Length: 69
Image (tube, rainbow, N blue to C red):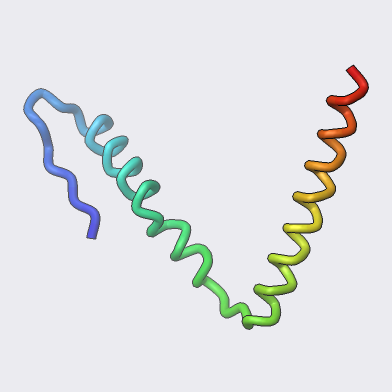
């Protein structure tokens, strides 16, 4: 559980900002969003493969663009 305590002379906005940062760093929000719906293992593999293809294509394109200049 993420916990933040109010520091001396700290506003509520600053406290909320620190809390949000801690939550983002802990990865809880990402985990909750990922577990919102059930996704089968085969679907996860398919998505990962699609991402890898897109990443490779982008890297390949970027390397050819750099060579031209």
